[in-house]
Amino acid sequence: MSSSSGATMSQRPQPPQPHHPPYPPPMAGLGGVPTKTLDVPITSVFLFLFVLGAAAHMTILQVNMKRGHKFIISALLFGFCMARITACTMRLVFNSYPRNVSIMIAAQVFLAGGVLLLFIINLIFTQRVIRATHPKWAWSKSLSLAFKIYYVSIVLLLIALIFCTVQAFYTLDTNIRRIDRDIQLLGATYFAVAAFLPIPLLTINFLIPRPKSGPSFPYRRVDKFGTGSFRTKICILLFSSAILTFGAAFRAGIAYVPRPRNDPAWYHSKACFYIVNFAVEIVVVALYAVMRIDKRFHVPDGSKGPGDYRGRKEEGEEGGEASKGFLGGINTEEEAFGEAEGGEKWEDVEMRKLVLVGGESTRPSTAGLEKPAYVLVAGEDMRLSRVPTLKMSSEERRKVSSETSVKQTKLARSRYYGT
Image (cartoon, rainbow, N blue to C red; front, side, top):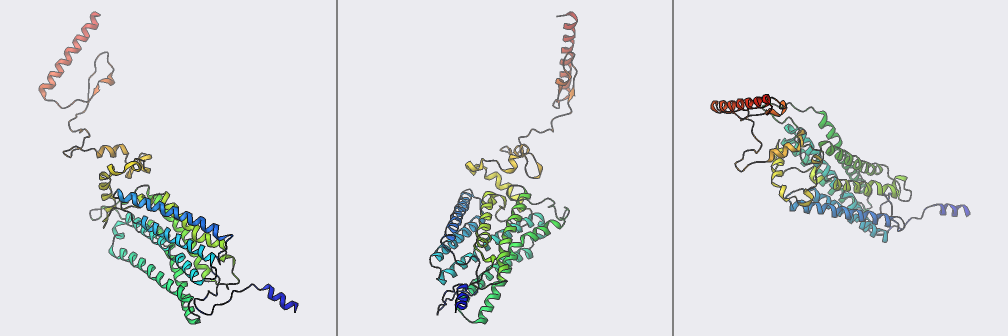
């Protein structure tokens, strides 16, 4: 009797199964059921951070729109932060009603869907880098179509994943649940690949040699876009893709090794849940805001082929100087270190931008100058006489020569007589 009671006490209490759908999942989930003592304060902190992220990216979007600087990625980041705010709110509600399966479903749906926006944003940035480095083939219709098809496949698979997730809570049929699980595994793996894809694409992009410039293809230099160095853009992409891949791969990995709901493993802990989800994502959101990706990864509207990134960007800079306001007066990375794109000094760039009403440069032309004539005058420093002279006619030259000889004669006489 005592042994049987001891075995009963050693077993963990199991919540009663409802007799109607939705049914609780039989397997342990990442993070488990939230608790008031631990989950509420941590989730509240992340909720506040995502509110700050949404405010930052919406402010950047509004300021840029007023300046005519169109950057839709800021709107996507704002949408992602709003999705995470909703997910945190649903988790707080789930903490108050831990036996409400409908709230659990809503929390999982918002948690799974939002991060895909970050994957797509990184892929868009990667496509821009490839086009800037290899404009000859990266602007081809086939490659552009391949990226668009991949974006559509991510969205379609997300819809299928949401449907299967919800359906698994409303059926007890083992075959249907098996099919739903297979689709969930496919979606988790596919999304992990999407998070990792920018890293091999950038690696292949820089391993492929660039073509030499010629009459048929004059774009030898990198078709740079936005502000800041090209190396900084690559570092931002690699870092954000690496940590997003860590989170996506962790979620996909634990999906392949399920555990019973009453016997979770260490990888189902709350620490793992907050690190691979909210912590990784808020780092990327803050990185994009601090590093001002709205300037670094901006490309001119209507870019359709090689050279559009560079050529149209220079035209837009001349027309937008007056509307930058106070924030526009802060030096960019190139201005602070004294170099423009291509190694030009900013003094040369500013001199080149000065134009007259007639369209001619204000830089003095050297066409009217001849080789400096060095005239040695007795008692004078030779270096002071190295003055370039303008081209003159023969009569003017004879007149100047005679005047110079008269001055030299008077100077010699005054020194000879001591006057």
